[in-house]
Length: 205
Ligand SMILES: N[C@@H](CCC(=O)N[C@@H](CS)C(=O)NCC(=O)O)C(=O)O
Image 1 (cartoon, rainbow, N blue to C red):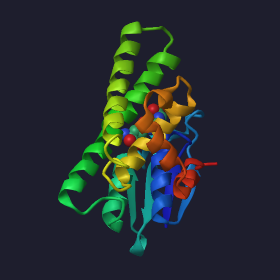
Image 2 (cartoon, protein in one colour; image 1 turned 45 degrees about the vertical axis):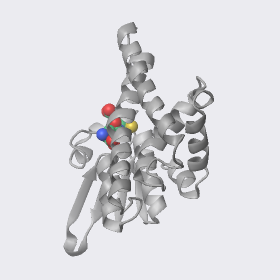
Image 3 (cartoon, protein in one colour; image 1 turned 180 degrees about the vertical axis):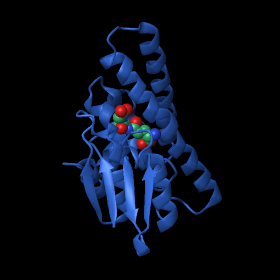
Image 4 (cartoon, protein in one colour; image 1 turned 30 degrees about the vertical axis):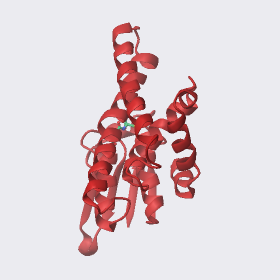
């Protein structure tokens, strides 16, 4: 039995897309970030950094395994199932590289950009320019790669799952991201059409 602790944000959506893609059955526990539910002691026990997503796996013998962070959840289930991660060493190296770009560059940069551009009490132009520039580096890298391959590691993989929700969020935020990056748009539109992605993006509803 799997329980996903989540909220409708890009990192939460990575985990729900992954579970949907793998056809794993799971319960959803909504952690209302706006109400500060992530700071409650019961959630702290699951996610020491008090961020969603987290996942609890009930194992035989009453054992419980917890995972926190979208990267850990994606890697864990790709390894366990042998799916959404290429076997060929060269393709695997590409998949890992783009997966990490999604987890450690694109996601954190997009969140920090949002913090400075939309939520900071004072406008700090240097911080906004810095994060805008870093985000552009991510988009430019993805755009170039997607001009050469259909998906980030060739075949659809956890690399795509790790990047898609942040690109989808930027696309709906306005600013014409997908008009400026045609390869990214082609990839975004293809991934968005996947039934598992549609279902995962609607969690929690
Ligand atoms: N490294 C984590 C980051 C998770 C994260 O930033 N989660 C955000 C929502 S997208 C969150 O829970 N924010 C609540 C907070 O910062 O208090 C991952 O990749 O999943």
